[in-house]
Image: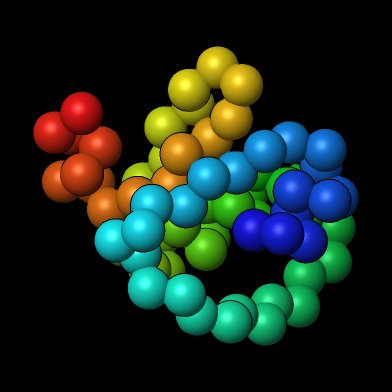
Length: 65
């Protein structure tokens, strides 16, 4: 998320419930939003636009809030 944030200038907040994991991805000619979707889907997560930032968490956590 750090690299994606630096690349896009957007802010991402990851829930404390999501374990920290280092991920290496090689991509070419893929828009950032599609890359984010690939990562989110792979780990069974969801994204919620909260105005000033994107909140990343498990779907059940986002549904509760």
